[in-house]
Length: 353
Image 1 (cartoon, rainbow, N blue to C red):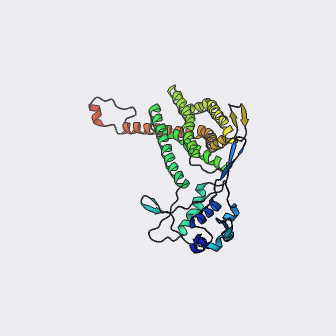
Image 2 (spheres, rainbow, N blue to C red):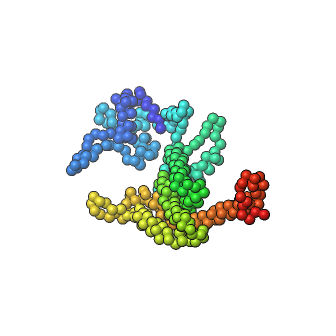
Image 3 (cartoon, rainbow, N blue to C red):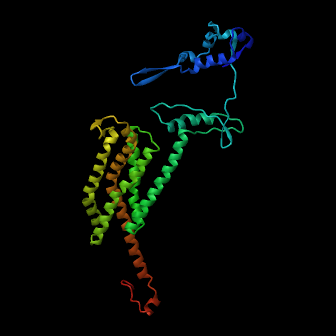
């Protein structure tokens, strides 16, 4: 809105453009003229038009201006109110002119789905002139950066876990079998989010997935480590796998149950305040950690039931393949025993004809 002052008419009433501008600024922006004290609190006294009047144009035609003589003059008498376009401020990011459009999202929805389902399609349908482009920034941009960081952190965590397992078992195949428990836990994490209809939060859900990867491998480590010890004691492959599963089932279940019970208060929102020794049934801090706890609980729950079945089965199949390969190599060596080895004094392999 542009207010064009008729200086001649305003001068007849003793008004100046500065006085008219100050009156408009006071009417719309308010003016702190005094303060009111009540108890220990101070409240500013600011004369200003009502919010409803500040949102309409007709109030400008009814606005009364005080004159030096003590009388009031309608603004429409000394000025003309018109609609006009303005250039505004020119913002640049990386030496490029930028116009930012902001919007708020309902509390029940998150930024990611709204951007992917609605805003992205709206932008794709828009025909922009040459030299113009549109992209998402703000919260969506921050979430994208967090997603990239957590993805790298997840891969680094898996790599470190794999290297530790290789050093501990002195094998490359066993760590791959143990890492399958991480894949099983991811299925449980997504199941938990589907049951609670919880969106995939980049920060807390990503942290939950990373922490889950370090927890679920413990069950597989316990199983395979004890299986290897039984085989060193002379157990057959099948007997060692079955005995290890039966012996280590109880500690695996106890570890999972204690972890799940410890995270239930986060999911339910229960919090205990040690300062006032009181229990809060709806805690804001617990709601912040709810998505992470949900992922860890369901991921650990599914992995606990599937790991004692899948991991020993894969270990048994891998060991059978390894033993069959060794027997095949021994038979081929005996079958294709080279004649010059006899001249070198090497004894004939057993079963050679």
